Image (cartoon, rainbow, N blue to C red; front, side, top):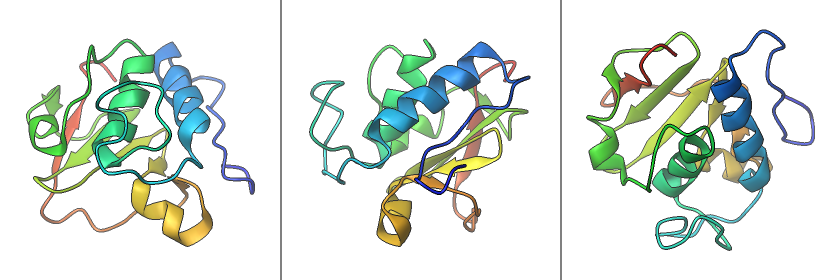
Length: 131
């Protein structure tokens, strides 16, 4: 992750990882907007699930936005090699190539991309098959 709040994909990352990071970079500094990203992909702001859905959809892994609750059963259970979605009924965030993409990060430094992890107790870990 760069100082300007933008993430860079590792050279050896699969195409889906690169596409997720590119999508995340597009909206990393947009404002938090409850319901944002659910009515339309290109929105003036995004909530947590709208952000994660936007990134996954950009990689062809999701056809439409999902709220945090439905993301609790999306994909395969457990952590993935490259991508892990952490979800509970009220919040969701994504870890891709070791970097956290989380709306709560915007309060810290203005970007959804965060180097550090947050506690995952109470969250369900899911991942796209093969990733």
